[in-house]
Amino acid sequence: LVGLHFIPVSFSLEATIGKKNTIEALNGTDVLLPCTFATCMGFMNLKFWWTRENNGTSTKLFEGMIRKKDDDVIQQDKADRIEFAGGKGNNISIILKAVDFEDTGKYACHVLNPLEKNLEHEAVAVLTVLSEFFDKPLSTVSQDYWYIISFNGGLIGLTILIMVTKKVIIFIMKKAREKKKECLVSSSGNDNTENGLSGSKVDPKGSPKA
Image 1: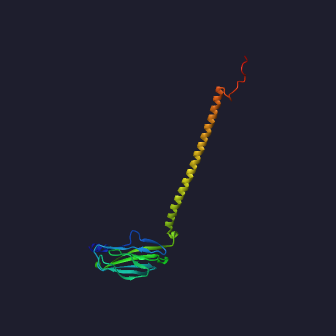
Image 2: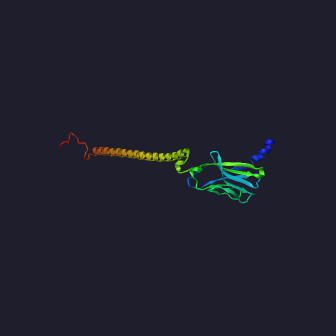
Image 3: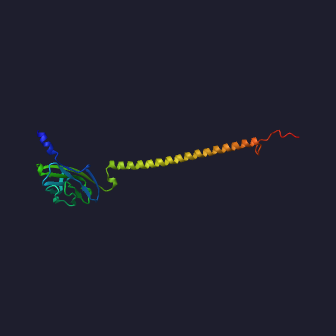
């Protein structure tokens, strides 16, 4: 019975980053760190905050509160380069502006609901800051190159096949013309012999004298 009592509470409040917890951004750009929360018991004075985990140290980036559903977020604290991107409802996302390579790391979104005995939940996103295409993880780069190599290889193979096919067709047509020419010459010689035309065979005995 004790276990059954705690099951609904443990799953009533939830923060989520989305389908993927990995985010990539180019150096110098702004990146959205998404987060939403859900609760089946409602909330009052719900608190939320964002932190960055770096070498075991947690740094608070943003802190806010929502008094009740459909109320605006009350901003309580904000770090440099952080902008709130949510609004009314359950969207508590933030934007990290002009990211640098040092911003690579883990970012956690926390929610706490006083109506649920201060039940707290968090979701973690991993941010990677890239300078260009080749900064992608090796598996991604290899996959991209595999697509490129496969496409180029298929194109080259198709070109070679067309060239070989063309040469074979030309060779066959040439042989057919030569065979037809030989056949015509041979047929022409036989007709001349039978009809006594020029080029026909001459009787070695000659014509009888009158």
